Every structure is written in structure tokens, then in C-alpha cells.
Image: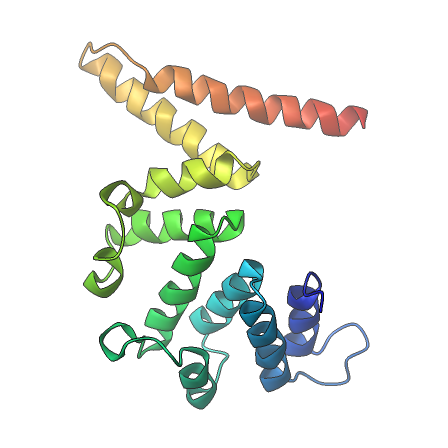
Length: 185
């Protein structure tokens, strides 16, 4: 079937909102699992968010990662969170790309079991920020613009030519154009 609404349904089931009488986390997990198996990467990202907030019972987590080689199988909530986030980011989910960039930026690295399967440039936060920003993810665009502005200022102090300032201006310009389009549309 069509799983384009699976994430919305899972959120309703998880929170017990909008006509759902009480929260039903196992039902939310089942909806997301079916969506994930049907190839909906957004379902994987929603599962990662649930893992991060420790909302999924351990038994349900184990069934979600069946079929993964034992040495690569996530064991903790954090490892499940990273597993589903990296998978959905690699499949082009902009929110997951931004979240992965933030994770790498704040932790400076990924656990070896995940890092070993990635290319070197994928281990940098700006790689994932760029991927999300190029899809119109506003928070990623703001982060990049600010980062490039910061790097440009650092380079000016060192009297180096700056490509970073041009990149910063590009992202600020794109954000301004989006705001203008929204205010006229």
C-alpha cells in the first residue's frame, strides 16, 4: 500500500492525539516497520527519533533490526537511533541528514561500527548539512551560512582568500529568496 502517511499516523498513535484515545507506541512501531519495509525512508527517520527518546521497548527494537549481521546489529537505544538515522539520511531524508550533521558536529565522530561503513567525506557534519540544505532544509541552510561566515572571518584574520564567505552569502541569499517567495505566494 501507500505509506506516505505512515509517519503522520505513527505520530498520532505515539502521542495519542487528534482523536486517538490513548498513546499506542507498539501500534506506531508496527506502522513505521511496515512503511520501512515498503521502502519509506521517512519511516526509518521517525523510528530513529523514537529510539533517541527511548520510546520503543527493547523487544520491539530487536525485531526491527533482524537480518543485520551480529557484529553490526545495534544493541542500545543510541545505536538504534544512529542506525535508522544514518540509513534514512543516506536515502535522502533531509531532516535525517540535518540531524546526522548535528550529531557528528556535537559528538565529533560516529561509533566505529557506523563510521567504518561510510566514506570519509560522509564523516563530516558539513557534508550532511549541505545535503539537507540543497533540498531546501531551512535550518541546515542557516547553519551552513553561519558556519561559512564564521570560517570566512577566521580566514580574514589569517589574511587568506575566502571561498567560505562566498558560500555563506550564497546560503543567506537562498534563504532570503525563499522568504520573498513565501511572502508573495
